[in-house]
Length: 103
Image (tube, rainbow, N blue to C red; front, top):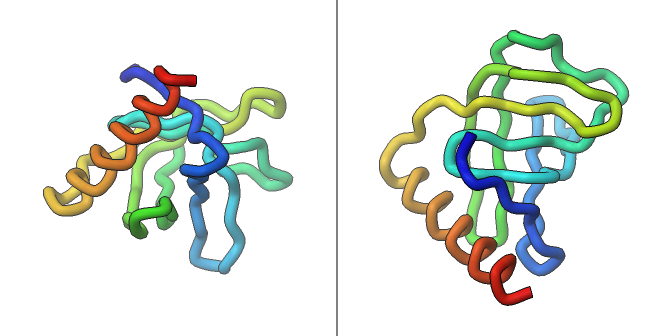
């Protein structure tokens, strides 16, 4: 795994699904995200997709469900992003990491 950071309150991140529901991102890195536990979680090892909503934009993301735990949440291994979205995510992660380091 990459260095995982918890998005600060001011840099809140969520994932929005096709049905309009959204879930809070608990931790994230360039290669994976951990979502809050869900009432109806996706099956482990299944394909997954959504829109990562961050303060500086929205990023379509997809990947594979690595694990589902009712306490720690849902770990998603992300697929590669196209360059523009990867830059947007890296910018957000840099801001979160700097805030994580300062706090």
